[in-house]
Image 1 (cartoon, rainbow, N blue to C red):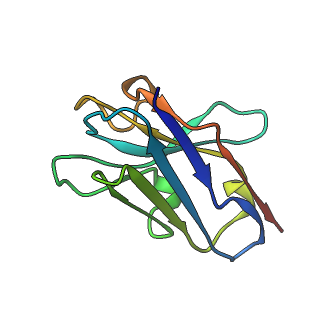
Image 2 (cartoon, helix red, strand yellow):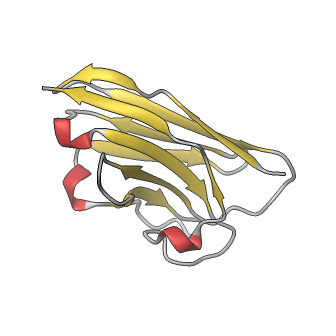
Length: 124
């Protein structure tokens, strides 16, 4: 059974930085897209960033462009999210996910394996 574990969340002040890490383990599987999503209190989970197998530029939601950087290693089944210039509205539980098909990187339904999430809290 594939397991996905995120780490690196925490409490930081506005303007600070955090790096989230995520690793998948278990039976081998083909990875196409690797993504990060987040869920703020009282809101639905939303797309944050993704990288695809095709070598295209990473995808980011508009609110994090220029501040967040996604990277990953398919062979190691790891994905990272470097978050700079953090704002209170970045607060939420951050989830990483892996997909086994080309799909649409921004859509939750295209991802097969999910972590349990890591809490990120930005104080004002």
